[in-house]
Length: 195
Image 1 (cartoon, one colour):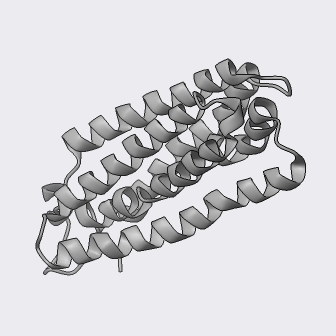
Image 2 (tube, rainbow, N blue to C red; image 1 turned 180 degrees about the vertical axis):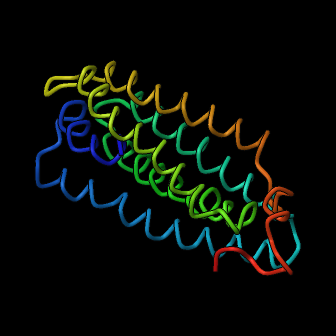
């Protein structure tokens, strides 16, 4: 949210990009999201079905590459010189595309670990994530405004990086790829409770 919603002002304030070029630059991450999101899901499935890596290892690998790779690119974009705006556009495009790779890792993982309760868990996950989406405009609005410069954007993207790194470590430590015992215990005659 902070990445796509804040891009027009970031390009305008830091790189002084005109509105016509700005609109083109803001469309590029959406294309990267479409391409990398779908191709990474295909690649993940291929790795799992070919038994190259376990389900858990594959999900953790793609999630970590997604979160840490995008974090590095987001933060790096705030250190690019003003006359190298195209490099920032490339960084932001790749970062948003990489960020999309995590969806098929973390969201589908709920169906792996608790197929009987994945809808309920997903609802709880979305509720918690929505709190971040609600707080993001308040917090970033506090730090950025129409005249915000490179330093303010470093703070905003730095906070995003901190959250992404923390989330990656939590998923690396606690993430699983197999159905959990408490979910198995609720199955009756090998029939899932929720179809």
